[in-house]
Image (spheres, one colour):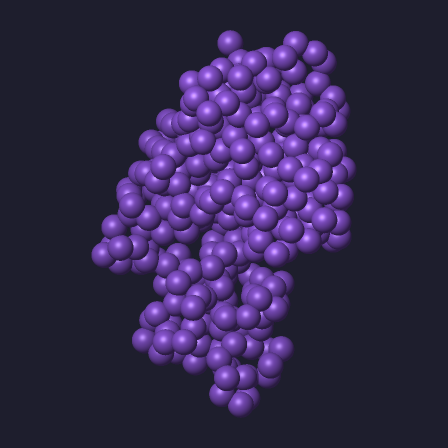
Length: 356
């Protein structure tokens, strides 16, 4: 039996809809079951560009927020560009599915603010076009918005290749009954035939504030730096999962030196820290965090709450240990001994009342 979680935690669970269904299908089902409603939303991400000299396109894709009748959020369902293997890129776009593309993050935010995520592809750029006092041009199956000088602002293009099937369930922060809340989402998903895609992961978001103190932050860095392989073995991290990497060596060395918060922050910058590591620490080093959390990204994909809670419980207890100012020890060289020691560290924390 899994131990209950104690910390305020948000979950991101990557699933795949069966052919003929979509993340909208799950949103409508969840809303019906709770007597709520569905609101379309934009999801921000990026994708490789086929345009010479342009490394990537920034894009908005269609997502759905599920709300209870009281207006309380249930979850948000969005695309995940890392899910590829189970999709057929030859499949033609499904009517009603499209994306908005640009090459400037400032334009992306403006597009998200002024474009209706529930509008159709032919009209989705109209509100932004009004800001520039220009018209939207159609080129085949793509709608293009250029400024008065001819520079392209945005494109609205069909969303083909079964991109409506990836479904990342993003929960609000959960404080109690984490398993009940997850099963409220995953049970209907299983009934509709949703499965775990080849590249799937589960991400945990925990409040970042307790880990901003230098000794706690250094311990978190030691945990995911020195114990990386042990953690991945114990959690059964998906080897096909994309956008994972070991923490920068410069940052781990700074943690070993028991550097100040400022030293750790500089090491993170010099080491090229981004969100796409085994653990996302970027918000802990930001003076103006968008979402003040520590994000653990190495849990394997799952479609049952029990499997998620088992791994989340281990992470929670190890993070509790990181709040102890005593430096986290280095792992034994023997992998089996390292696994045993890490479990013992977690179990020792689990015998006490968690902090926070």
